[in-house]
Length: 507
Image (cartoon, rainbow, N blue to C red; front, side):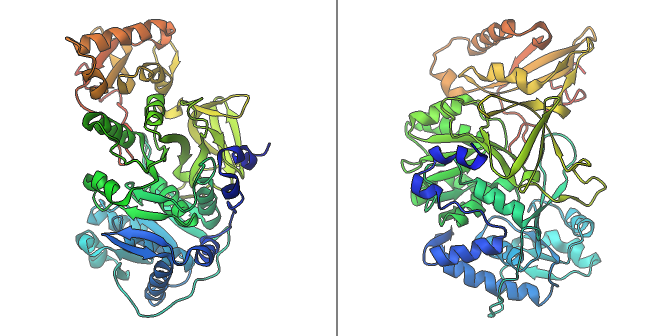
């Protein structure tokens, strides 16, 4: 069975045949206008914008851009999640320009540095972020374009194909320096279509956006797949108001990172009701490891939580798990039009969904044969399901020569229903010996219901029971129960400790 057909049993039969692969965003948008013109596309600040209105507004902004920027240029977008962002992004990429998505929290000097490093020809900015464009104004002769600007004109789309550059996005790993990946129209569309596979009802849904557009999960799986499927996307302007927006909009699908899914579940337990609403049927969850506990608990609420795996470099989605109840710790089956190879435990990729390369440095990202080395350690079973077992950069080499994958050890402790997150890291004992240490964040709502006199003592005892089942080289020598969450990256991944960052004070 080929990769596409592998997902057929998990989609509604009529919907599966509507999943059509396309080469460019321009092709997708023409299809959207043929099929969905009068349907709501984006809801923002209590105003619904139809596909036809978005088409008109994007054509207007294409005229704004074409008056100041040459065809094929790179245009930076500095803006928070909004309807104007969608309008500007869609205008740029359907004009054959490359949208360089800048995180809105960047300071003025960093914005200028990015514009210089990535060969940007214009900077589109949100007026509220004008202060962050000051260095560009002072030192670069770039057009600065207000994202709310209107021209009153209608500029048509340009011809784009699968190889036309589309978008540049920053990678956001937990280790190493951020890089900027260039994704073609073909890669973006493969990632967009991949978001449809394995979801029973994916067309004409209601999405609530809480992820940032500068993250590949938010831009491609949340925005692009929503548009492709004729769904309505409500943009949550302030995540503090997420649950209020849930009650107003009643989403049927949400795209989340595990930390947000964990918080929503915790609040649902605390208030005794499903805080995500009774209309929600599906959660697409990724960007970090998904605890099996989340899959099981959301199923009790009538919500299917589907883990997946992807990278910025792969236009987000590499695999998805429609069998999450049976295999909750797997990241699922690989999506179509890509090749996978496992070399010494590391996943290598190449295919239509892969980036063209990194921009602004000497590293291309690929080996001589066109393989991208993900740095992720995986295993694949006889049915084709993938499991992530760790990251090469996170491997701990102990003084006895043993190589330890923290994620592999953490998985054992995370299987406990009262453990929310854990981190295994290298530390130094008082004797000077290098050891494995463990810190855990408990699920407060679960522990609270157990009525324990000494909850930390109970947790440590249960952790030790797990520890005793591990091979000697994987056993941790020190355990700590945290009373706060770990530091996290913008994509909500745990920021891993380095040897010179040991919170216990022994280094």
